[in-house]
Structures are given as C-alpha cells and as structure tokens.
Image: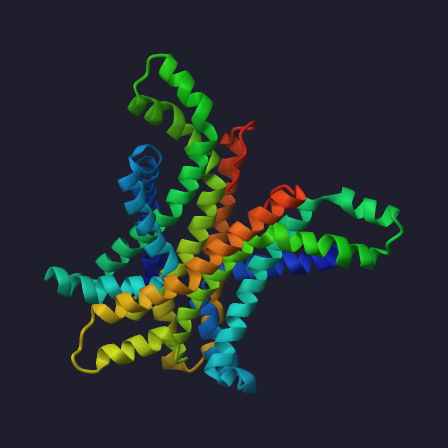
Length: 211
Length: 183
C-alpha cells in the first residue's frame, strides 16, 4: 500500500519535472526572444503559478476548470497538469537565468558562424544552459517533490494520503507520519545526491550562474 | 563554532528541506499533538505555526549563511583591527550587512511561507483556504470565482512585498557597494 503511494508520488514528481522542463524552456525562449506582448503574458502566467499556493491551483483545475470548459478531469490528470504547469513557471526562471549567462557572446559568435537564430538557441545556448542549471534544477526537484504531497486534498492516493489513511486506521499517528517523512527524505536526498554528482561531472568551470 | 554544532545544523537543514511541509504539519499536529498528547500542539494553529517555523528556519539559515559568506572575512578582520570585540563586530558590522544582502532570499522565503501556510487548512486552521471552501459550500455553490479570488488574495499578499524587498535590497546594495551573496 505504501509502495503504490510512493510510486504515485515518484510518478507525479518526475512527470511534473520533465513536462515542466519542456514547458519551461519554451517559456524562457518566449520571454527572451519573443516580443513584449508574449513577455507580458508569460509574466502573468509565472506570477499566477508562483504567487498562489499549490492547493488553490489543484482546486482550480479540479473544480473550476472542468465547469468552465465543460469537461471531466480525473484527480491524477489534474495532478499531472498542475505540477507540470507549476514547475514550468519555476523552471522558466532557472532556465532563463542559465540562458542569459551563456547568451550574449556565444549568440553573437554562433550567428557570425552562419547559424540561424533557432539553430543557435538549439545547438549552442540551450545545451550549455542545461548543464549550468542543474543546481537550480535540484532545488526545483526537492520543492516539487514536496508539493506533490498536497494532492491528497483532491483525493489522489499518493504517499501522504496513504500515510494518513494508515494513521487513522491504526491510531499510530506519530510512527506513521514519521515513517512517511522518512521515505520522502530518503527519496529526495538520493535524487539530490545523484544530481549533484552529475553536476560535478558536466559543469562548465568558467560559467557560474547568478540566480 | 565547533564541529558538533555544525553537524547538528547540517542535519537539521537537510531534514527539514527533505520533508514535505504537509507531512510535517500532519506529523506535528496528529503525531506529536494528538498522538503523544503534547498539549501545545493539540491546538491546530500552534502546531501549524510551529511546523512552518521549523521549515522556514532551515531555509533561512541557508540564506543567512550565504549572505555572511558574501560579506567575507575581510570585514570581520577590519572591524577587529579597529578595536571592536568579536561580539561588537558581529552585531555592529556583520549583521546589518547580512540583512541587506539577504533581502532577495528573504523575499522569496516570505512568499514561500505565505503559500505554504495554506496547508494549515487541512488540519482545520481557519485561513483563506478554509473560508474559500466554506463560501463554495454555501449556495449558489459557485466553484469558480472564490478560488480565483483566493488565488488573487495570495498573490496580493506575496507579490508586492517580495518585489519591494528585492528593489530595496538592490538599491541598498548599490549604495553600500556590496556584492551578491551566494544564497
């Protein structure tokens, strides 16, 4: 039972992180190279997802959006959508910071070598940005992994929700929650350690990110 | 400080950064408060505040450490060579600068904390979320507007102050010629 909950949490975290990365890259490119209007829209998007609690976002996508659009959304789908959109808003900041720090000279150099702007972004700026944004990424991983716990309020059976059920069934609140906390702690610590090792291997020594 | 103290701080930070706020709140309220029967935490508000405070402490210790590192040893040595005692140097020279360098970090920690406070409604603290749900449960049962209104309220709570702190911090930094900490 705990294992299924744990897998759900892992699933939500990684799906959110990867979708958030893809969306975040698009947002960052839009913000850097798009016009003023796109920039403003992105700013509102980011402000909404960064400024409001994850609980409200879950409620909005679980209760409000289906009514406005007249569709049905399951709690797992809502979880995927919200964590991806939320994480995208945060990752956009890290990606933008990373891209800006490799941006100027490299972009000029790439353009002068005859690459188009899109090529320059794809082959020169982004790969380097990815490498130096890993510390930001591990921050985002740990905060996203922790926010997935909030999904129990829309009835999803993640690790915390299962822990709560067990706690109420056995009346052993202290032990159950301590155990759940320990699982989260180990999970997050291990992934952070792995990201750390990867970063040490592939970091670019001369470029430091200032975000 | 000594090595043991450093290890304690390190473990504290790691633990509270690796545990979801929600689990921490549930643990303190149900586990310590109701399970062990520790009287102060039987009160949902106290338990939630305490949990959020513990978590925030772990974050803020990092922010301040980064800020203090950003100031560097030279200031400390300069202050000492001018005849200030160690305590005086810390409180008159280091701490005031620390707060200025730490403002961006403190601003984002503040908005993080405001948002995390919404978890408290799960253990029944009557905060914005609690009343939003109460409004939604009363006729005309409109589940759209109240949530957006609540989201707007949270943004209103976080955005202006965080932005102001950011601006104030960078202005002060420019005035005093300080560089960015590694917060």
